[in-house]
Amino acid sequence: MSDPTEDAAYAAFAEAAWNRHMAVAVLLTGDRHRAEELLQDCLVRLYVRWRRVGPTDPHAYLRRMLVNGNVSWWRRRQRELPTADPPDHADPRSGPYEPHEDLRRALLTLPRRQRAIVVLRHYEDLTEKAVAAALGCTVGTVKSQHSRAMARLRTALRDNQEAAR
Image 1 (cartoon, rainbow, N blue to C red):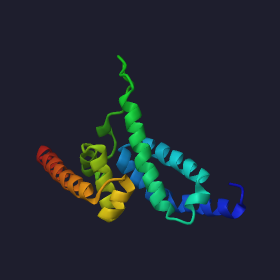
Image 2 (cartoon, rainbow, N blue to C red):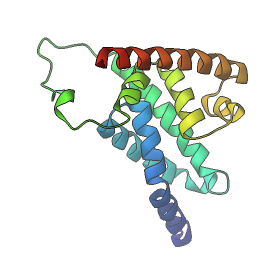
Image 3 (cartoon, rainbow, N blue to C red):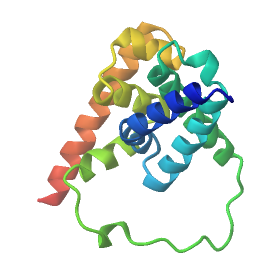
């Protein structure tokens, strides 16, 4: 892309969309650092395709890129071999408690497709039809997976509340 007006339009879009799509990426990945990496990669790929995407809905295109990028990362990770000495990680309980931490943990227990459906339906406030289009599945699949996901979330949140007592 070499047209200064298109560059400016892309820069304005990326700046305006960062917070919105960063939150979606965090909910999809469950990790802020991984979410930043995912969003940056998707924005770079979007820049290359900006001329084709510009007149359509770039938010929907970027959202689809985030979901697909997260699935690709998850699939690559499944092929990695575990090591005998895993790296040290900080204790997750050592940081300050976030008000929605229980919900975030419960979301992480969902399978990736159910998590994507819940995030797109409730956080992005998309219709079932729009979620189906974003994930490349039928509306019926979205409905059934959403129902199962909500049941699992209710159970996980109830278990967390009972454990906290």
